[in-house]
Length: 79
Image 1 (cartoon, rainbow, N blue to C red):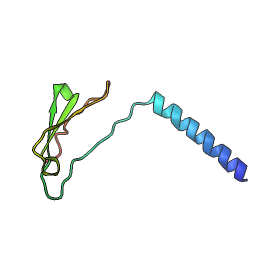
Image 2 (cartoon, rainbow, N blue to C red; image 1 turned 120 degrees about the vertical axis):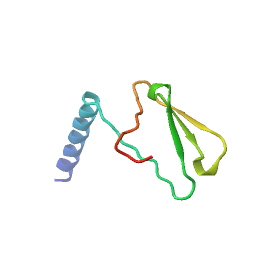
Image 3 (cartoon, rainbow, N blue to C red; image 1 turned 90 degrees about the horizontal axis):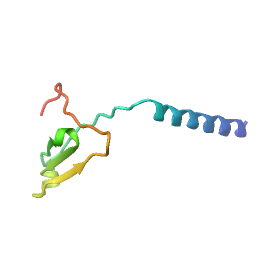
């Protein structure tokens, strides 16, 4: 029973690995803040995100996306 459950867990994990390779996934992320308002700007056609005022910092943080990753702002959200 315990060995059977471990075997099924491994089989499910392998099936999930195949699903992850075959299908494309879309992640949705929302920027939220409690005190310092974060300003995010999408640059270079969606391959770079610039973060301003992160935790009240003066410097601009630049996040380069991995190849094949595109960032876009949804029209339905405020800010």
